[in-house]
Image (cartoon, rainbow, N blue to C red; front, side):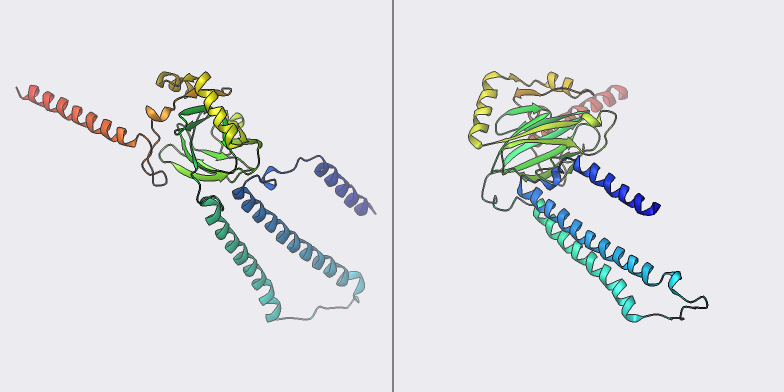
Length: 310
């Protein structure tokens, strides 16, 4: 009797908690990449729920059918060496499940790593998304605009994010548009997304990066291409230019509100080069500067050696 009321209480408690939960954002996709991942999550939930129900049903059946109270006092279970059919079932079914989920995962991975389906023929909006402790910097090289801690994007257009970090490893994540991807200091990772519905979405760093990690978030606003173009025009009319001195101040550890600038830091502090980033904006200048510095260092060394010889 006590067990019965305990189970009833547990069910009521679970229902009460779930009724107060907000819908999971990952299951409310607003873009093709997020929809692929949401479908995979739902498929996994359905499959695992079916397995759990079957296992618990078999458990209850065994407990009732073979409970001790129904057997004779002198009952002894028969000696069984093994059952090939049962063994094939208990081994084969998990193998099939793992193989099926692996196939689905690999297929989905190719989809989310590529340009969103239906957007292959469109020119993407390229945004360089970089982090520093504990803020996000978004550079629009084509629009010559940079924002801090907020992101404006057009709907129905492919988005190509170039991810890197000016501090520890972070992870760029907009749950309703797609999965997360790392931003690192020594290379550039590319993430393809698209927003199909206007609205405001939450973005954040999904990788622990120190005491300010909890507030390392940013706001995302998706709008029509016309509204996006108007915003770009307004920024160029009202925002202050971003200087190298100002950007170095922004890189200092701390939290900031939303900020907007004309120009980008790509002009004086280009992103790193890496196997996933290729040759990025400013990489040629960096190479030239490196050669010049190497030449100057060589001349200085030659002079020092000459003086020392004399």
